[in-house]
Image 1: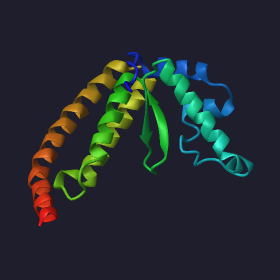
Image 2 (image 1 turned 90 degrees about the horizontal axis):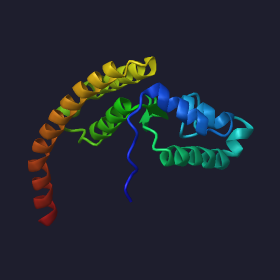
Image 3 (image 1 turned 135 degrees about the horizontal axis):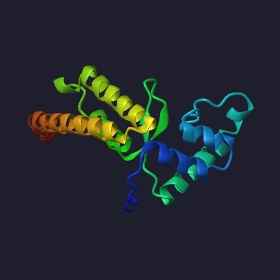
Image 4 (image 1 turned 90 degrees about the vertical axis):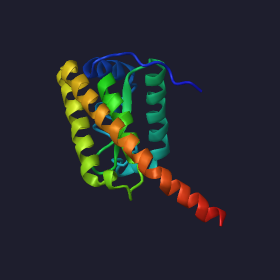
Length: 171
């Protein structure tokens, strides 16, 4: 199934459109980032009805997909997922998923590279929310070049490792 083409919008425009699609306080909290996509913030009686809250989150994301909003799910520093808006933020979120799939034994996959990419992603999100989409696109372009270069290095490093694994499995 093909994903729909996303509109090229600023973060503030995409957030405003997302808030218009919300049907309740919980969905507004999810759209604003006050509630996590995983439902980790549910407490008390709400915890017992977590399946209903999950349905609500999925319905909101479905409406956002149908409206072709530029958004992405990104993990926070604690591993909880939240939403970011705007084309530059979405581009950086896609790059973060590339960084996350690198083999941990590769020297370039050390935490410092991932933290640096995460800091740039945060800067892109903040610039987008300030309405400075030009700065957000510039920062996203920088991190895009860095991650693509590192991804090529990772692929080159993995070739002999994969070949050795295949030989070991065949023996």
